[in-house]
Amino acid sequence: MKKEATVIERLIRKLEHHELLSDEEKRALETAPSRVDNYKRHDVIIAQGDRPSEVCLVLEGVVGRTKILANGGRQILGFEIAGDLADLHSLFLKGMDHGLEALASARIAKVPHKTVRNLMERYPRLALAFAWDMALDGAIQREWMASMGRRSAYEQTAHVLCELLIRLRAVGLAPDNQYDLHMTQEDLADAFGISAVHVNRMLQALRRDGLIELKASLALKILDIQGLKDAAGFEPAYLQ
Amino acid sequence: MKKEATVIERLIRKLEHHELLSDEEKRALETAPSRVDNYKRHDVIIAQGDRPSEVCLVLEGVVGRTKILANGGRQILGFEIAGDLADLHSLFLKGMDHGLEALASARIAKVPHKTVRNLMERYPRLALAFAWDMALDGAIQREWMASMGRRSAYEQTAHVLCELLIRLRAVGLAPDNQYDLHMTQEDLADAFGISAVHVNRMLQALRRDGLIELKASLALKILDIQGLKDAAGFEPAYLQ
DNA sequence: CGTCATATTGACTTTAGTCAATAGAAGTGG
DNA sequence: CCACTTCTATTGACTAAAGTCAATATGACG
Image (cartoon, each protein chain N blue to C red):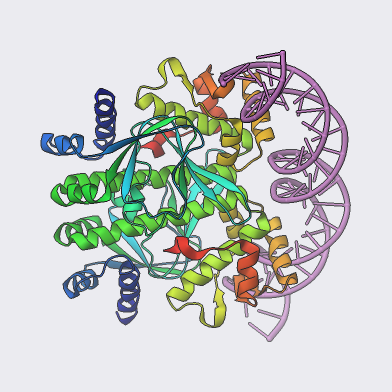
């Protein structure tokens, strides 16, 4: 219970970037009923096409939003980490246009749609905060689109590593500019829209350039933050 | 005035895909104060980085959401057509992470943020409908991400043409499966994340395969809808 | 120790980008 | 209407980026 409380605090801190919340609103969030499920790598949390009746809050681990195409391709649309509401949009859309998959072992709190809707009705500021979260989500997606379309594989790789550094640091998970994604280069490949072999080459290039250091399971240490940002053309404003 | 009313009806019809609206809510939307501006191709409607105080409703023409990167690249993140709220997210985010640009002559109604906020406060169902619209927007963005990452240039081209056919048809702008984008292959290139020369080659391939027919300014006629959908791996569910 | 997944490397292919030239179209001013 | 400019589309030749395939290495784990 303690750990969940901590994560919900992170969520609250994140939501408060947009709207200050009253104590009552915070308490309502903290005490909202939810169920916690555990997943291991490759587990499907929500399948593409499902019509979920709960919203997923990531407590621990890394979750990928994955889309399977008619041609067999798999595209990872984003990474969700502790404190992220992974599928808030499922409140509004009829069916999931993509799935949620555990890329590393993950603990997920599931809050019934009905609960979220009640919260939004009773506390308009919470509703605004959730809307802000969806909008932020859109901004991250757009940055990824820009990466896929108009950044080289090298820049794109550096860019996502920068983004994850900032996001993980914001929830205290990248002490000393180090973090471990517990996932594979294949996952990165599906996120970048390139091949796993090419991801490998780009990671090596980043190492060769003295920007990062990494061990298996994508445990990495940023050696030169400014250098990595420069290589990526990283401008953090979109993360708000 | 007549034309605006028609477009607002389209917007209402679109919003009602998610939430049925009362007559009062519809009237509130219809009578919301707004200013109409006209733009010609290449005009900047909202610049990247701006902090707009109004929401843009496209009445006529085609608007692109464009993002300029540090490396000089330009990525088009989406096309907005009549009846689309082009920057609803600006209600929530601090600064625009991208700009809005007229890709063809466009008429835009601008509704003050304050007005939209009032509408949302007074009519919770309108608030839900707007949230749904933002969520739908996210779904379209995700489909584009999948196209950029895991579809070939040929499939991607076919896919966007399918999407535009469905969206334009929904607002009565693709009679007889024909529509004219009034933009250039360069714009498509920036939307797809490929070069203009390659867009040209893909369009020619689609013509060669008997799927489309096209004239200058991207006036096109879909000759074989099913063939185009098959080529694209198009599954329209994401459009709602 | 053996098995499986992942990472790394090299050789080769494919896709897409770049550059440059040409051809069409559309708009402008006289 | 014409001459002129400019933008856009098309084409071909060549280059560069990324993909594919296959072999090998490394590492985690039962």
